[in-house]
Length: 497
Image 1: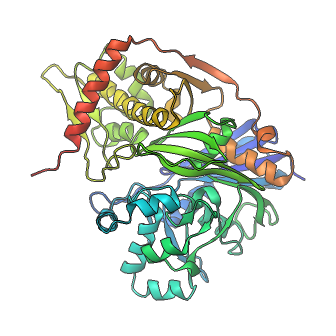
Image 2: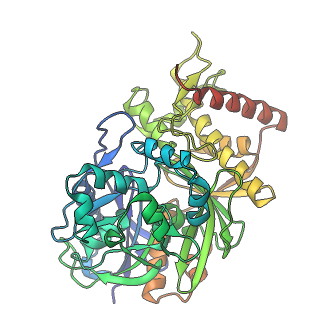
Image 3: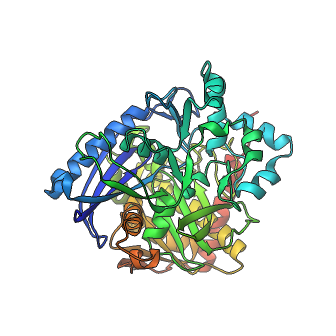
């Protein structure tokens, strides 16, 4: 058996491959970006072949960086951007349409029609989700309705649907495994949270043929082996799968009820472990599956802000204020405050707790004295305010104030943002030494699936902290800042006349 685990972290803007020791220590990392496609305002697509090519390149570069051969890989773990929807031909493996990304809002009208028809409460009851274009179900329907002949072929079983984990498993196994894990399945709006299987009522409501759906599997089990993959030998078992946010919850060792983590990626995602109970939120959060290992099922409450790191990318690519994302912190530190500027990063609508697909980004409070530094600082504050909204809703659902949160993702390395987060949410922020907790979670799930560890708790181990950010802002100042944010949110949700 090989000595290393390959973790594939397929994200929204790039694919990352990590080589980890069986203990979970990362020895090499490689990231390969791929293009984003915007056919029209509010629409976001990926080319599935560009995704696959980026994964293969990342694996090759990680192996080279680790100075090991592919034959030394004992198992593969997969984590992925969730909800992003691909439909492909089972015989050829070629997609019939570009992948529709989780950020895409093209099915907003379809979701509104379902809400107007009164289906919202039933959808939440069965799936734990809300009727929003974020999720996969209406995206599948859009592809079937807009690709000639696709709906008929899907009903005959000739076409396959999958989130990105499913697509990667299909390609890694040479088309032999059409599966998705239960955490990704819980993000489609088609999975019944009670039975953890596809729900006939939801399939009917969204007009999705069951014949095109993958088999639902656990997060730590052998689902197949590599077959015909460039750069990898045949026979490496794929043993771990989880959606990126659930993998991060696992990788942060949030094993106990009430443990909370936030991942700062393209969006920001806050999850709390609710144990074996699927808690129905009263405050706009989602009920989702955390993971399933054997017979053990862990559920979570989740709040999602669609735009976090993507707001920094917008400052870089859209406005040209910075040349690379890492420049935002030193730029923002040039001023002591945002000078009254507020930025609501609703560039793809608002997620929890608002669920307003029509909201739009808002920059307000700008004067002749406003500089690029003020805009940079307002952007970081906007991200921290979004997450503070999610933490507040989570505390309301739990019935007690969340006292600490573990953070990960690229933007968690930003000390200024982390201090803003502690101050605006009024909680302690804990940053681990290893920020690649998403990939680490996938690798540790693979280690459990391979039989190296007896349980998820044993595999996740203890998280080593890098730094703790304590609350420094006075309560009255926090209150004023949060009120200004609430006012800005209301303005971002005003419909144009």
